[in-house]
Length: 199
Image (cartoon, rainbow, N blue to C red; front, side, top):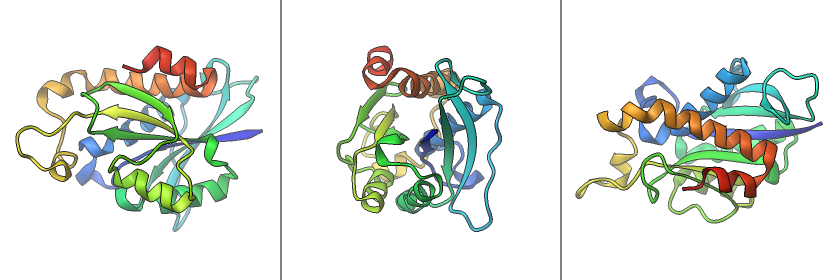
């Protein structure tokens, strides 16, 4: 039975929990919540994982499962995400084309989603690290828009700040929608998921 690796990018620790850069964590945590599975971490592992079956209806308990999903939260910092992903790939025996990376995207307006396969890293340090560790960029990406920083604020500062009060009003709903997009990608394929969720 094949296994999907669904990785939410972010920085570990409560200090970073509400930051824009950690939206990937929020989405994989929503997926774990709906599948009713808990994250566990092996001693000295650079990530924690929650595993769930997958069938045509999505993730969660199923007697008709045809694949499995490992939900991953790296315990490395963003710019070292590749180390955690490479370790997870080895542990679960996953090929790059069975990897989904969920990450923040500066060049997309807040809460807009773009799903794609392959491509560059567009200046995202997490993607850059993953591409370097895997030796390829041929994996799926679920890009969650956070918009560009206002005024002259540096992008590096912007991503390490909480969402605005206005953004937080709809954030929970948008995280759920992003999790829906991941499930659609896994169960219906990229083209169908793009038609449903790309904006």
